[in-house]
Length: 457
Image 1 (spheres, rainbow, N blue to C red):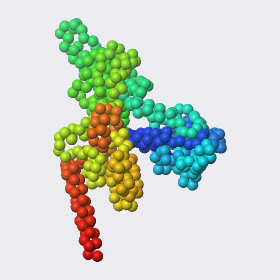
Image 2: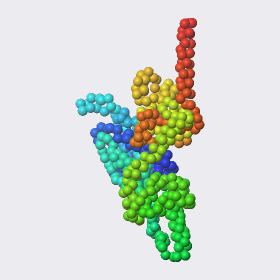
Image 3: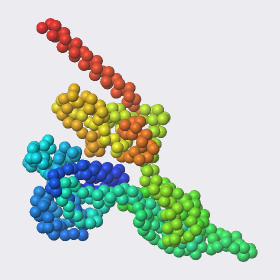
Image 4: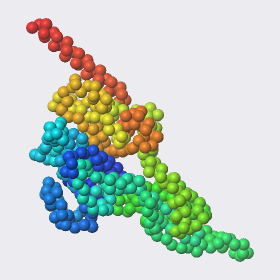
């Protein structure tokens, strides 16, 4: 099995969040895998390493992965991670990657047969967002994914923020991602200063000063558009913007009547702050003053998504729906416009009964209680099912949120971590209740009919 999430094919934030979720879940499942002795192999190949060298050096240990490595003519831009070994398949939730032809019944220390059956897993991953930093070859009873998890954490915590440091002497444009700042452009300016001289020419000097100031602000706005807006993708390249400076220019950049500063950047401004310096020193000071703000800013998007749902619920206009049964009823009828899922809602299951003829949605607790009474064909995660199929069932937008914010916790605990904004007003709860009542009546009628037939016979 080759798992590749190609970063070049991720076109928007929605697809990126879904790719991150899948990748994170994949690594978590690998962490659960357990093998026998040192038969489980972890191999990381950095993009700077020639693939042919690695094939030869690990030929003996990676026979089961060799034919998969041959599919690559060169090392991918982000490197490769290979996970191979005989592991207990009951511990992880992988649909693919196992070789059905190879299995091994594990013995305990006394040579007795245990209840564990080991299966061969061979998984080749192309890390989607960050290149592998260091080569690794490890034989153990488990897979080692720490490097990939750390890189994923750095990526998720490292949203890109834009900085505009502007005063009467210079302007600087920079980005900050995680702990790494990058200066994009810096230029100086010599604006006329206020003075009491001039006599009858004082008003003319003042007008010239205003003209020069407006021209400077226009140049700042145009350069901000150039560095922080992608013309090809027609979207902002930053998740938030901080305006900083020692004078009023930073405020005038937002309040000026001109629309030179793109509206997509205006909407991204999360703070304006006063600093004592310009240029690089001003950037460092602005970063220091915004530490707490930048730390919390990664949650702003999730808060906005959940608050949109809460606001719709508060209005009570039947344009929103929450809860597992209600949401899935609306999904199956094609009524959902924006579907909102909490990543922590892993207890929601889609249960297929009687050869695909009936689908039920349950929590793990409900499934545990009813499992012995049901003829179950397949059990799958509701989140996984919706992520894979939302495009095909009429959902326009899929939003994944965490439970790290207060709003996220309320969403998970109060509404099972699943909700949606509807395309139009629908009383989903009433329609679902009517359908359930109709099903109960139909079952009762069928039962009575069978009883009458038994009596007749």
